[in-house]
Length: 474
Length: 110
Image (cartoon, rainbow over all chains, first blue to last red; front, side):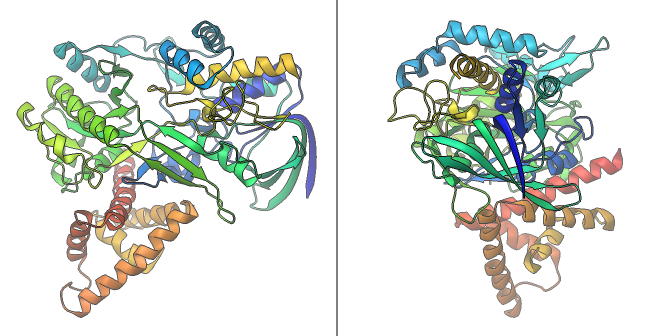
């Protein structure tokens, strides 16, 4: 059994943890970051490939929120967290949400102006850019369809840097914030799972960990810390707190963006190496339309969602790409850590309005893709009708049912929520867990609701703000 | 991986390339091991129940033994059937196999 001592312990190295580590180390604090997953060279695997799923995804991408219907979800489990596996789309928190959350949850210092200043700071530290030159065919499809229908659409900036030849490199946490943290003196320990936190009165004094060594041996490690930041994401942050006996508003109110998909066949080849950067915002904030990773495996999986044979379509797979409609959901879920189980149980309950919104999103997505020139649409609905003409789309309204819809998500948030209203929140306005002087959360769990867009930018801005508050306070 | 899961993976894999078939089976085996315990436990329980059901159908002569196409048809019926847990079982196994097989075929083609 080993013992370590640090001033600040950061648990988790994704968008929240990496920002926290860099900000505090650069402010002169002694910081140790522990990450459950391994360190993986960011260039080692093709993005969205099977090899990447094995190396960087938790459960090889096979998480599932239980419910009717169940909702599949994916999270990163490696140094850099989900920033290593996501599409890198960058979207500031919409102003109206900041206003709404501030009022509803009583969040101090959460005005659009404050958040904008932090967003600018994050953007100056990362490279946030639009694609130089023309978009790839899979993305141009969204722009073309929306323009024909007169719908609003936008090319989102991404956390990418581009060289002179236009080649992009995603600015993941393992390429940006974590090297900054390390340069400022932080220690990063991969393959180290925190089992529980050790409490003493209103303080957390240590974390009990299990560290796996490259040879496979497991070492028990206790890390003593003056301050602890839990940044394991919306599923594993509440699970760790619950395992440590901390339960007040912890794990309830989980939010996500339930997503329904279409595999669209075009009369021309589409690219498969990247994720489309255009989004259709006509139905925002309740429905967002965009494109998904579409390697051959993902195309096959999307086609198979109808439950019909895929051989004929797969012969033409280079002309097929997958697209989605994601909704802001009225429903919510729970994260429950049960004794003896390593993984928490995640549940999510979709409302009837959510289901209706998903059906509407699917039909709008179909309209858009047909307008863009698609010749065949396969919905992610078991027994779903393969649509070739506009007048066939109406049938999807009745086919999106709890029994038939195949849903997934990559955005999970809100399993603690921040704010001064203790009845609704698990932490104060700056992520300090109620009842503890030195225990903070700084990740997607704090967002009071799913933002309707990729949450990475909001997580990073809020994490930076919370670090400033901590530095001024402690 | 349980015996019925191996059978299901074999039935759902379409390529005749033995090395890819073996790699798909290894991937699914690894994925099932890596799943959250409660999901793995649920799938294992279903595998035992559905495997027993398939064995009963075989004993009654209603499911030809050693015929992957017949097992695929049975899986199709379950996928479109009324029991949610069984539908989810088939979808989960199918997703793993199809994704792995096609990603590996693409890798090989490259």
